[in-house]
Image 1 (spheres, one colour):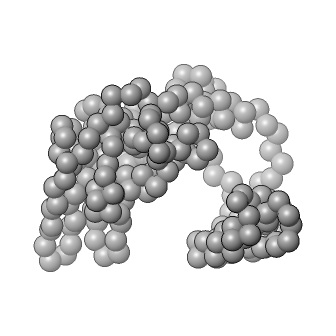
Image 2 (cartoon, one colour; image 1 turned 90 degrees about the vertical axis):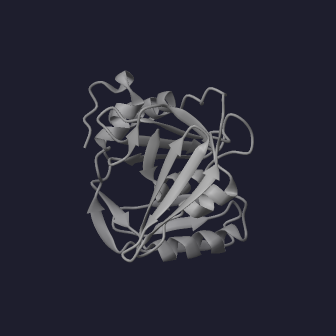
Image 3 (cartoon, helix red, strand yellow; image 1 turned 90 degrees about the horizontal axis):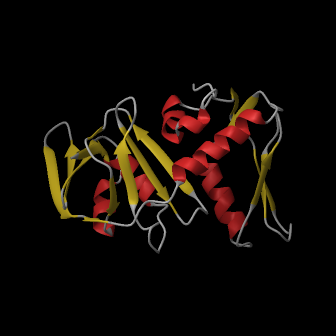
Length: 211
């Protein structure tokens, strides 16, 4: 049985790939309790989430339909939970007045999931060995970031993102015909890696200090 925040599951579901084994969303018990949720589009983009209140007594690679992901998406004013048993997925919306449950068929992939854990471990090892050049990071408006990516992306298939201490996040395409500068709302201390991410990456990260 698997139970977790459905909005987290849906968010990771935005990053699955078109072909096996990347079509699946990977769920597994977290070492210190809770559930790890992973999705990747062939390594081009990867989402790794953690629900500390989640429960899992198995590891599974799930193939949710569009209807399942739509039902799982977070909404304002209510909490949603996904529970999976065998091939059944139940999404429960908890409202102040009443609760609502929808049930769906959910398939499972038998393909081994790609080695995301090892890739994350390699990233953490590199980050840990790299000298710290900045002590702060910018906090950016989600609405402005979406607008900047949409505008710059209308003229390019890929974007370059860079930022400087105390300055804006710069987005531009290969041709440099448009540059979008997004100013941070505030400067924030660069957060340490969360302990659940280090634990998920495994023993190759020994010596790395989690947050």
